[in-house]
Image (cartoon, rainbow, N blue to C red; front, side, top):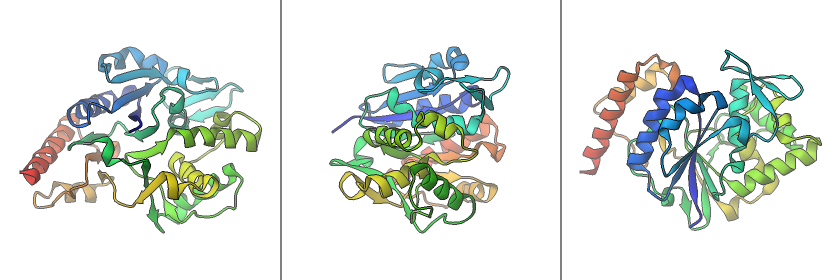
Length: 289
């Protein structure tokens, strides 16, 4: 089986969450799965403590192909080489789109700092034979901001401006490295400039929707290189209502859930997040017994 690497883009304000993610990867992910952690250069000293034989820690400025500089005293703004300002949220997506430059793994699995694994994950959970898992929800998220992201992806790719038919946004999303490299080449051929500059000029964009549109509508290699699923590997708590449902001790976690996502704006303390995750691990162990 080709190599699978978990990739995480983080920064200093998320250090505690990222530390817990790393511990959960070490506890639950197969030893054959490496972990790539990408952080801004100025945060490297803080994150070096998380380095292990399976975890490489590299800096954003070395991974992104175009010169970007982080503004002093700000985590939210960067400058491109033409001094154009780039929001931190856009920069994080550019960083994700750049991870093919930091690993030669065939398959990439993205894990944000605000998730933690609660159950064993092996490469076979993501790769079936030569086919990679593609999270795609048919007909979902086809209005408002999500529709706009599909239209922006269409514009970037130079194809008909429309909803692709599926939602590709989620947690623990997997990409083929070869298709990510092909996406870079396509964007540069289409726009005649470095692909990272193309993304940096966007005021809003979704990296997952961009990639999904590319493999769905440009590469057209879904049937040979991917297998579709609309079942998430992650139980997400985006709001108070979902958190309350998660706290229901009678609620059963689906068997294919491998991790828990606690959105950072829920206002939970580090201790509260740890307690929730510990309870989830206990529930999952009870389910297995």
